Amino acid sequence: MLAATTNGYDVTAYISHSPGLDGLVSESDLSQLPDNLQLENFSAERTDLLSARTMALAFAITRRASLKVGLWVGGFLLEIISHLWYPAMQKLKRPQPTKRTIGLPNPESLSGYFDTITTVILGEGINGFAGTLASILSIPGVGRAIAVNVVSTAFIIWFIAYIYFEGPHSGTTPKGEGIRRMIWMVMYLPLLASIFLLFVGMKNQFLLTAFISTIKASTAELRGLLNRAHFPNNITNSALWETNPTIKEFMFARKIIWSDEYQKLIEARGNSTNSQEWTENVHAWTSRLSLTIASMGKDGVPENVQTLVDTYYNVNSTFLNQDLRLQNQDPRLSMYSKILIELMDGSLQSARYILIFAAAILISLGLQSLAHSEIKANDPIKGLLLHVALLWGSCFLYFYSSTSERVFQWLEAFWVLPTIAIAYGIQFLIEVTLTRFMDTTKENKRKNSDTEAARPPNLTSQSYYSEPDKDADYSGRQG
Image (cartoon, rainbow, N blue to C red; front, side, top):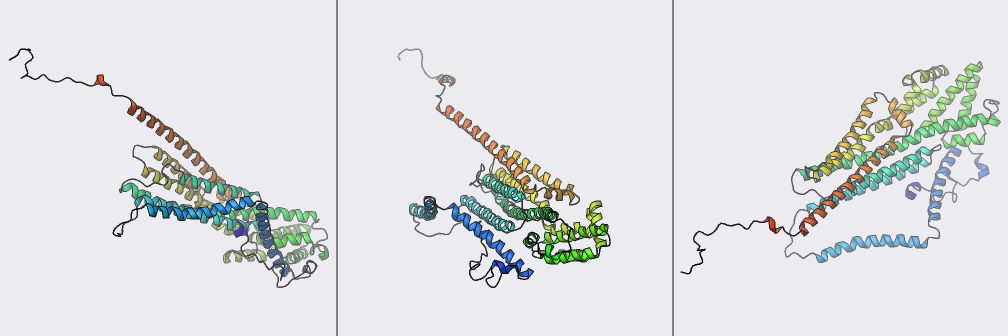
């Protein structure tokens, strides 16, 4: 997290130049700069402040903790030594062959290779989440939804790691060279691909959550700022409104220059002939501004979407008023709603498939467990049926929603990642329950086998009857 949040941090800021500027500028002179330079300074200062806070937190955690740091360093060195020591000891214990031969790798080591690949994918996924989270934390208006997503993501990763590494057959390969081993190896392809694609979808959900929560929080905060400034009283007083520091900082945080928006608001005021038309023009101005906030400038917005935003921003008020009515009547026909859907198109599609990838992970693990087990063992089959049920629920969610309305409501409630976390939590409880049951069954079988082995043989149950010898003399007479 520290590396992600300090990526691109300029150590020369405040020393040779002000953040985002070519030279040093005092705080009193910043207000005299053009608005575009003030915006650059505000954005750079916000990023540097986040990096500085992260570094300060890291130093504060390790302050007066020399013993803790020493243990960390010692553990790190011990880990390195153990990785070097164990192979060396194994090589010394292994008898030296008289003639070097080339052979195939030990089949039993295949599980170790796959475990390493899975560990790398999990680690890269965590690193990707840290980078995405670092970029989200600098977005204004991000609320508690991000915290819920972070907690859900942590549980999802932990559940996946537990189910994979602590399963009943983890670290082993199926016996034999038949169809079982082939199924076990083939199932690693959908397993690893699903883990990777699930993590990509989860990162998209991070961005989508930040997008939706930013729009909601920014719109509510803008209304509050305007109400506290007694809008629209004295709206034509540029000295009072254009230089308002609170509104100006609010706009800078969203990469918007307030003076430009104020001039557009004044033009709308001049084009209004009555109070009704002025109210409609204010609604139109607010809609344009919300789209600008949603796109957060032009960074990362597709060209076709930016064209729609620019068109919406430049159309007349009559069209915008009609579009506002369509939003209440049929949002699917509204241009405003179409732009929002285009902005979230990738995340909407990702939400449709993210549960399928989550279910594919469990199904792949279930098939691998089935390949390990005997045909008469029905526990893996039960687990596989549970995985299929989860996949069926995912497909039902995808095909039942003919439009994006239900999916959008699900996204808007920020329940995508918590839903996956709950599903994996249920599977975790099932795995723990089955493991305890299997351990109890194995222990009872072992006790019964030990009892049977320790019991003495029943001599009365054995038959010693034999046929008499017909040639033998049983009369007792001597010849």
